[in-house]
Image (cartoon, each protein chain N blue to C red):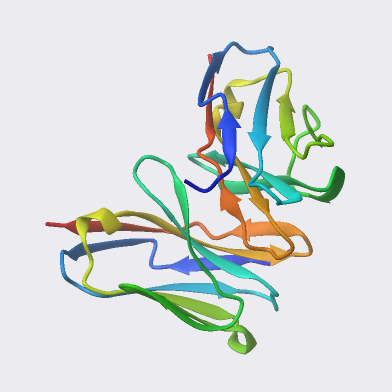
Length: 107
Length: 111
């Protein structure tokens, strides 16, 4: 099956800083999503982005399907951005999640 | 609120027991997915149903089974529970595309 690798595994930022999270996948995918798991365990959809670029407020994402990676950009980070960020791909109906990037934003 | 509901929110049971977790998808979504999230295994895909039929299977143990009913709600049955089955169990649903929306999860504790 497809392997999904996320980097970095951990990231600590001061409030107001910018960050880039990366997701590499080992084979072609038709679908890719980014999620944020907040400290209460809730999984929140950020982007459905099999290719191209999308923006939503301070967050944006880019997927370059031909090069098998996706990037999540967080600008002007806030303490509420803390949590774990996952990317997930669809592999013939089976969903594969990366191990996540744990983001801590300090006030 | 994603529109996906899961019950119960918490479940505490003993080893060897059987439990049933329930999921109602978003209105109009035909696909339901089940996941297990444990501390050492991350988010693991268990199984997907589409309009009542099993569509894809992941690393689901033989002690676990699932089904999707005509009204599209789904149940995940876990039997002969072991300590290692303690985890957060998520259900997600999707429409025609792949975009999945997750429920709040059921936290299972096996003592």
